[in-house]
Image 1: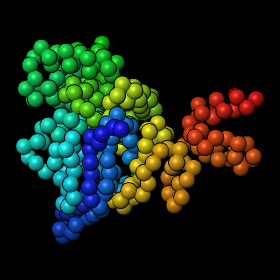
Image 2: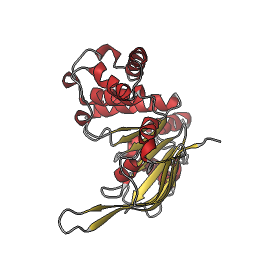
Image 3: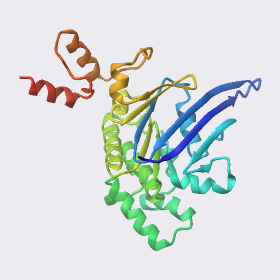
Image 4: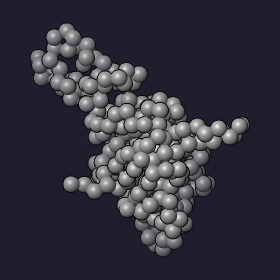
Length: 278
């Protein structure tokens, strides 16, 4: 059985409003485990707490109550912060806010350099990371010459160069066009297939459907935790979720008497089923 990389126990977190000092609850007693090698998508409406939760994963935010542990290390332990952030790397929404150098390969090297890695090893890590995201041929370019999708792939390469076990991506495709979204999701799927633990925060249900497990956040709490198939066929009170087109179409076909399998949640699943049914 896989071990937990991240353990969240009864985590509570609030923001303080600048005017008046009022507390705004963001997380309310959250329990969650992220297992090594898993691909978990976290979805929910704006203000549901999903991005706050992501920032708790590697000590960017510390809980008011409860505990967050990464490989057994408490995120509240100042002496373990660098070890925690090396284990769990973050990729954020806006790629332009993550790039710190005028040359692609220098940007990817930034993390390992700050960890004190030897130059020869940094060279190996940077080259390997850039190849992993199909950006090696762009290593001498300036980031400003790249598309949004390519910039996000560089940000992912920077996390890979730090040899993070788990990559947390906080709405990495939100500012990208459809082509850029496809590029980034292809890299995410490929990294997971190679054994990397992935946590994807997203608004796009089509992206969440590609995960092994979906966690739905509502008002700072976990409203659902299960497989995509379980969510799409037994959504219950989660009626505000924007279901993927394939899921909606499958439901309509079932109403017309066509016995579409409940695990048919992608367009390819439907195509394969309909072709086999001829």
